[in-house]
Length: 181
Image (cartoon, rainbow, N blue to C red; front, side, top):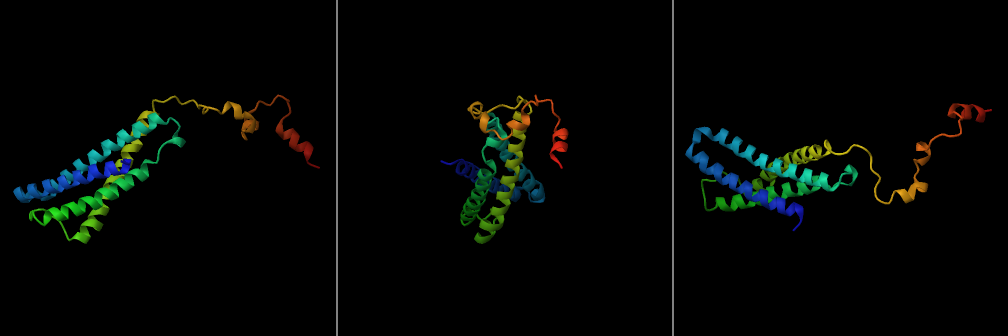
């Protein structure tokens, strides 16, 4: 199972649970509908953020070189889109039998609600990934490391001439003046 599919399934199921809880709680406490909705969405966002932090930390530990790290943005974008569309479909299907669930028409559930869920998942997960990577990177060794096998390619390194010690004793400005007519 791919990484985005697992995350998408988990957060689609979690969003359906949030919607079911929202419907039941709003029917019980109608005057607190706004507060209930905000608290449930924040709890969902925290769950996504925590998984994003775990992903970022794991990726930073596996790849100390930031240029070699995985593309978690695409993973979380696909997971968010999948979670939004699937949870919208499932919530709409449940609403056919459970009338107290607050849902719209099918097309609204798989477009508008899916876009909201995808954006929420993507933004919170990427914020978590950034924090997780930062938590690992701030404790990492800051000296540059050569990748394995770079020593035998020193003759093809284009920056070797710039880094080389100038042992001739000639200043570059003197060389430039001599070359000009």
